[in-house]
Length: 171
Image 1 (cartoon, rainbow, N blue to C red):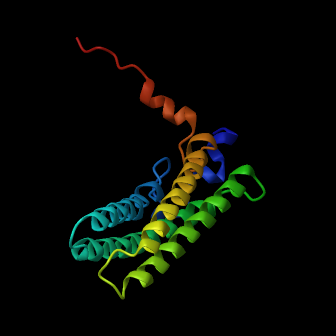
Image 2 (cartoon, rainbow, N blue to C red):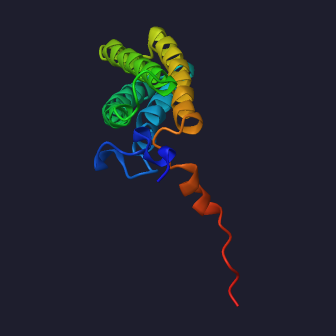
């Protein structure tokens, strides 16, 4: 094995984080991201229609689903974070990524609280959603940088090359 193949940030801390080269964190983040984007869409529709109640309720439920899903995503992200060597570009990028995600979760928790007393679409909630999604996008870009530029929890290139070996033609 080369130094690249033994880097700790390429290997899972525990099987719960996913096998080598296939971490679970990236798939888990689709739950809160999808729920929060759908919540924002419901908000926009709720602002346009005559009766916003079903969209307000749907948005509130989606925010809750996103928060529940974020607990799983955060837990899996922390397992990957713990494998990154300290005082590296990867660790500082991961720390910012994690901090932004905590801010977004806090903003959605506040939004859930803001929306519990009304079946309308609060303008402040829509603004918080838009800003939260922008911050979440920045955090996602940093997460992509961790995987695609720094190779955190990504199989080594020698392992990836197996996917490009030409198969012999059958006769």
